[in-house]
Image (cartoon, one colour):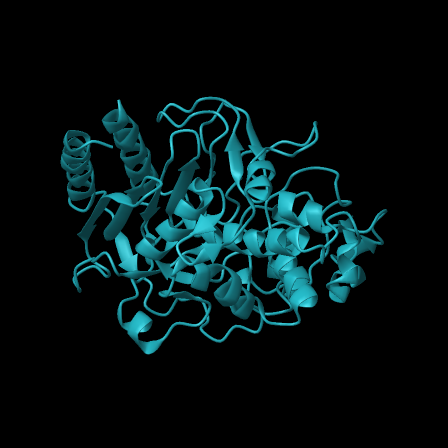
Length: 397
């Protein structure tokens, strides 16, 4: 990107962030970054880590929720590369506990779950593609009922019990977004004989020079962590001072458990832009990257709108409504050119507290947008992110 383009990008994006961090429907604070294959082309921050508190800074630590998934998926792909993991073998060969889970078909008259054995064993491929049969209670009424009536723990507890849930359907039947990647992380732990955080550190973070990222924060990271805020129905923001992902989780949740700064995540995005190569070594083979970013759902499987069944945690959520989306290993793939300028075949996803990213390997650019707000798909933050991504493509032209 040329100097004039970068200057125009800075002017436009600084305005987006500045406007978004003031006014009635503001966000508390935001950090946004964009990168090409060689380095950062935009970095901006606005607002505060906590309303009325310290200003937002580039090195602010966020709970990155489901943007953890692609990192866990990367560790699974590495196991495949080394011949240690057969994606189509039963996942229970690597994570035995998954073999004990049954399918829930509904509830009996007394309210007890009606369970049966799955017709086939779930595979790691299905886990990576979110066709394994698992969901989230904030997107699925059955899991919501299991939580409310039967004490199924929330995934934010990071407990083993929160992932040892019934399957919602037989493996491979359809696409449903859920705890599949937490189980994929358990598969990686079974293959490596180490906790997932250790595997990530050795095989992803160190080769990419990623330091401020972990399942358990250091004291220095805690001091820089942004507070999650609740958005009220009237648009107000309330700091959730008592809500945080656990720093000593029972399970390293491959689906959502990491804390990180945005600059660290940009290093991960650049690895995908650079065909798996990092500053301190190769993370994935070029050929692995090339097949891992391709949509792999088998029709009629497709990425659907996520219905927000727990309003405090998520609104109804969908990227680019009306356009087809696929799923890869492990990203959403937009099958058509997006209105932001993101071309067909690009990958990306999001995190529950309104963080969003995309990776455009065709043009060699990507970006990450971080706020800390619940519920998910917050209108102000999501619109700001779409404006930010659009501004990057406008500058490219």
